[in-house]
Length: 543
Image (cartoon, rainbow, N blue to C red; front, side, top):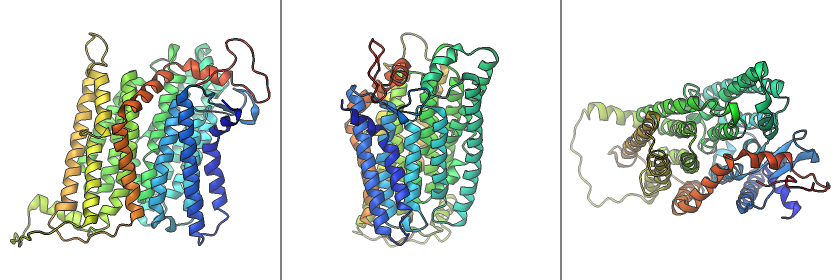
């Protein structure tokens, strides 16, 4: 492998950083130029992320980047393995449709939209790539600072109210993050994840208590970001208040907490005395989150709230599955994470297009009529041969596809993902002749009920939106607004067709995560530029 390819590792951070800074030098009236720079940046980011995934998948790639050429654990380290490469691709692929959708109207609704969007991507990618906890905190703050501006983009009292609530919760989480990181550094003397994994077995006594306290505080922070009940009351209001493209890219932000929990639970706290630390919290907290999200999905009358509670169902499913600590089930969960993120991102953008043709009070009136019936009960003249407008037909097909994906019905990727998880829990993936624990049956029941709730809610919303007898106007939808939604749905179709190779990648990813020695050796023994490679069997390693 050529040495220059190592620089691709830092490119997902540098590209949005340079683009976001460059965009600040252009006046807001130069919209075309700013849009072109932002689109080119996202396309380049997607190309780099896909290239990194291919390099990592080839198995012949040293996925460690030493900033300043300082060796670990003394310098800043960026690490790309199968999991981080997957998250980079998911973030970059989701960013392109969200940005294109915003170019139709929303990027002009406030100042510095494109810069904030690029800095958000920088924070996301940095969180996926960083190899130490302090820089994880730094990239978290970059991501959150950009999300504050994006959430309130477009103004309005609803967004300001939700934005202030969102900022307050995340500032408190950031303070807890800093306290947790300080406690871990005070007990272990390092924040490098690989070095921490090596030292953690040597920490005893009061230092051990301080370490576990710091880990617990960090866990609370990541669970807030993942939206676990009861730490998730900020999420439905914030996500439903955001403008459509922002809510679309926010679909992956809750997955950052899932990613960090998965990374730390297997790398740092997956061995020795720390094995199994916090798994019960993930298991039962995840089940409570699924139940809470399911109730919210059934109770939601507004489509934005329905999508927001679907995010909670997705997060709860992932947390509960991670709590089982089963490799085959975790592989299915990674597949589910990709499918649900693409689906929810498409759904948030589709909602704006669907609601554009509805009267402001139509939903309230529909609920009233459903509960109490039509007071007039006048017979309407049946119109024979009336055709559905093409725009409504396309929106209806996309809405039906999102409903199928969210509810996990065959044959789309949502069904494949749930089937993979259920197979690992109670099917051929279940272990031996041992009885299946009651907690597994609870998860199975919640997965089925959450899918049924999504089906009922989406069907109810679809009938009110597309088949209700109330008068409505055909929404004016631009091609550049419809194309991003269709692209994301097409990606879920591709994921369905390529389910075999995708699941093979997920299974190999989980196997690598369950063998943290490979990650640790690659980081600790990473070669410095211009320094001769040490001889012997431990002289460097790849991920």
